[in-house]
Image (cartoon, rainbow, N blue to C red; front, side, top):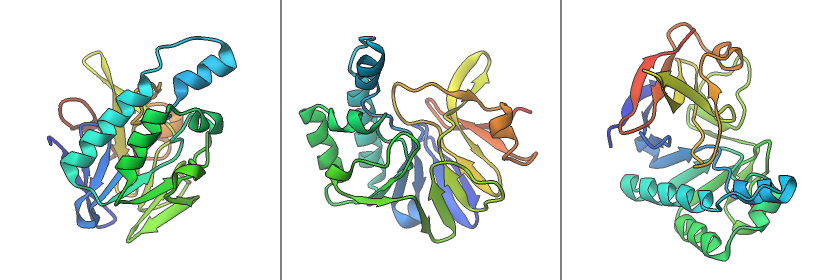
Length: 216
């Protein structure tokens, strides 16, 4: 899978090229910031009509990584839908697809700042969740250790090519946005950089997960 393997608080994790995180010891897949229904929300609030395909593309990517890893547990790390109305407006075929992906898996929706998770779709709903040495939440907290979060949509540039990226050091990990239609914050931005020590890595997504030193 061209993943990058590393440890956080004693847990052996794999940053996947897709932007998903896999924890083999727990058969656990974590994705952040799906932002399903974003085109619907933009049309509803701003009147801008965008091609409504980002939900299907995101579900296609999620389906592929679930099949590749065989994950039995899934944590969606917040902002799974662009807002609550976007969740309610999900196309019926996409809703069925998502329900099929959830079937037979231990599925947890973490509350994000855009939405608390789709209550009508089942699964567990939590503000944050601790599994072994790791705590999963949407937004990083100062001073945390063993923390896995999302929210910032980090992106890093390599040879002029900007890619979504994981950011990791010995204390915490921030995931890139997994959604197909999401913007991003440069990885050297002070809002991200202040959370990490000098040995932090940016792990770029793409054809393979590529670790590079975090830009200062």
